Image 1 (cartoon, helix red, strand yellow):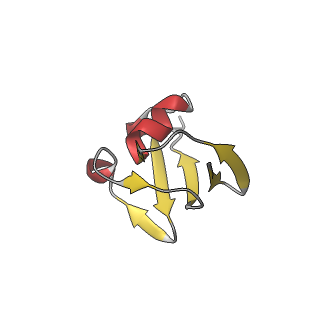
Image 2 (spheres, rainbow, N blue to C red):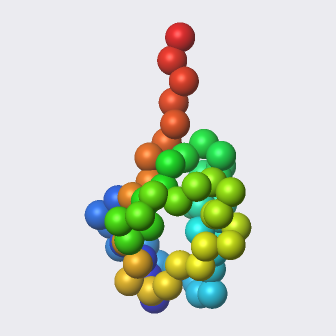
Image 3 (cartoon, rainbow, N blue to C red):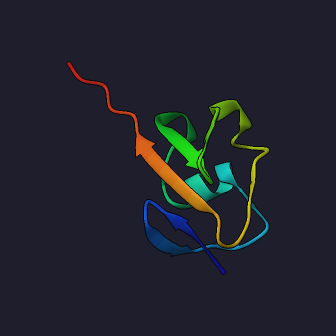
Length: 66
């Protein structure tokens, strides 16, 4: 089973929360902004937000400049 992340099909083990998905992909949950099925998700909700097969995620890394 899989989800669509940034337009790519990503095989995923379920059940899975958004936070678990990010960690499995090597992303720090506090370093990204996520849209789940068209809805922006607050970082405080990542650990509780379940993802399901076929869900669509848009993940953007936060980058600080200097």
